[in-house]
View 1 (cartoon, rainbow, N blue to C red):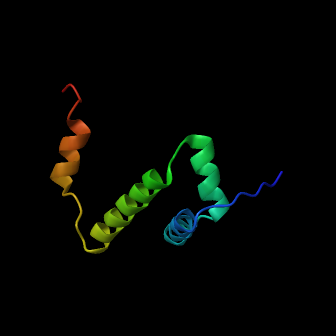
View 2: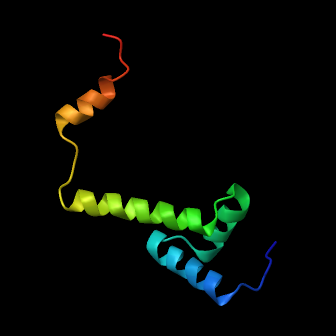
Length: 78
């Protein structure tokens, strides 16, 4: 079943920006917010964090093998 609601210009603009940044549809963003309680603010922060991580990876900012090893063995009782 399809439903329609009227959204404020601000909310509609935010959904459009999230759709552009995430490659999700407007409907997917709204459904996620309603079904999983993920507000637009939460989704905006999530997308910004993912983009930040991608930007760091693109610029070569990775953890060293020693750093990864420390994390993986942190709780390993040796």
